[in-house]
Image (cartoon, rainbow, N blue to C red; front, side, top):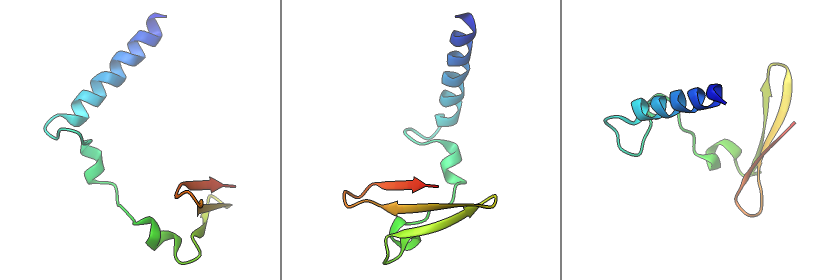
Length: 70
């Protein structure tokens, strides 16, 4: 039980450090590239992603959600 509390305390501390100085945003968001989903998915609304020799399909549902399947 103490291990769970310690893990939660570390996670909360890391969140507090990450958000210091930028209310509502993590500092790491500045370093992560952003790609508009319409650009990524194209007219077909889906794209195949190869990752470590495996193929995944990222597609948009009719409700506007993104689904990643293997």
